[in-house]
Length: 421
Image (cartoon, rainbow, N blue to C red; front, side, top):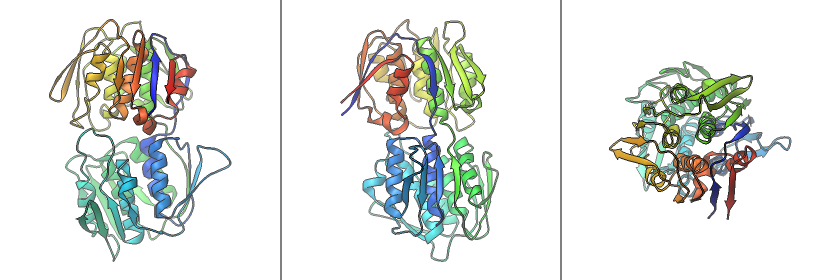
């Protein structure tokens, strides 16, 4: 199993190109199942999760080919569905595999999808997906760890109200609704930019969608969808991570292919912590404003609040800030698994239920640590980049799920980082 060796204390300087967003790419790949015409995606990141999703749709009947020799451009074509099943051996590796449920039901009237896996960051039930599909006329049973869904007469439009926003459920029901009879109205929908990106592809394919990016989305079903070409949005979590990499090392990074507005609420918190963010033509510059980082309290919230996927990275940043910071997690209950590993590097962190009190230290020190999930992994990378001496990060396969060529990008801006088999 690969590991990373990082010798810290080097300010990062240079330019980093942000890849296409993993969290946008996965539902976009699933959406290609809705049509028998080709769908082309640009800026597809080379990630383990993307490869897993491509394998899943290929099993269902999709051909996936790189266009023009460009690794980031993929042509997906599903002239007919050869299977209606998403098996356990593929779904167990990645929670987003459940996103094929809506497209399969919408196009074929039936689906058999294994209950999903993914990071061990707490329970993420798919109840909202299933209840929404039942509202649209699907008959659903849970049999031997599988969701078995049928809509032999097709799906129909419905009013669906979420008790709390769910990105995955919003995406799944959007994809189901575009081919349903009548109008579907999703109230309490998730508002993430990735939802908007999915709506852009679906509309390019001929879907009728209004309100994506707001809490109320209305979809008028159509009889069929056409093919389309779409460029995947930049990864806002990757952009935020590199902004914090510049700040934690005392360096200066030009982060390209990522509009500053993509950072959302994290932008305000970073500025409050003493990070200067300057907009450029195709991205932004990130560095410490006056050489000192200040402790800042953050609380994760659904978009447009502070993203839970940036919580671990921000905690790493607060480890070397002046004063104290309270980091409160409200989305996932097990998302402090990085805390013991940061403490091994010299951080002073005390966990109280869903909050962690971080008291900044003058410097962190390298040590062997172990990654536990995707975002926890990269928080350890950030801490190691700032630490004195060498850090060995084990179980880095999590990183390969969400960060394209991470060690190459960091090495190109001065990091002393090496992947060791």
